[in-house]
Image (tube, rainbow, N blue to C red; front, side):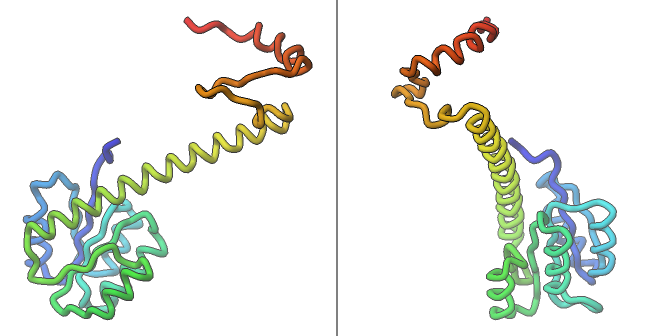
Amino acid sequence: MEMAKKTLLLVDDEDDVRNVMALSLRDEGYEIGMASGAVEALKMLHQAPFDMVVSDYVMPVMNGLELQRQIRKEFPDTLRIILTGRPDLEMAVTAMNEGTIHRFLVKPWDQVDLQINVRLGFDKLQLERENRKLLATVKRQSDFIESLEKDHPGLVSAKRSGTGAVIVDDAEVLKRYAATLRTLPLPK
């Protein structure tokens, strides 16, 4: 299942850096938005959420880590990457361990490295979204089975054949469900 559209917000207080990042990623098919700082980025996220935010670390008003923490709080499904010209390994490890950011990239970046990390980020997002859908399906099925067991005690713990078919060897159970089975539509 492919993500419908992949939206990416690039945040840096330097116009040239934002433009070069956008240029590096233009052929990847992303819908790219650009913000000159944290305040503008948050405003844009409130107007139309983005799948991923790549932000500079050193910015006026609010640094990239503070921005990414705020994004994590308000938009937990948005993947976050920090890009900085002033690498701080301790900050990067802390931010990654606490789940604030997915990746930490250093300026000047390698174009291929940036493209790969953004692509891998979108792959991760897609897997997480599919996982949430599967977990929701399992939860619904579990609730349904629980409901069936409540209405028909012993049904869930019924004996099964090697192929998973229910084996009914209780005469009372057979009598009780025979009428129900006769009313079910036959497969076409």
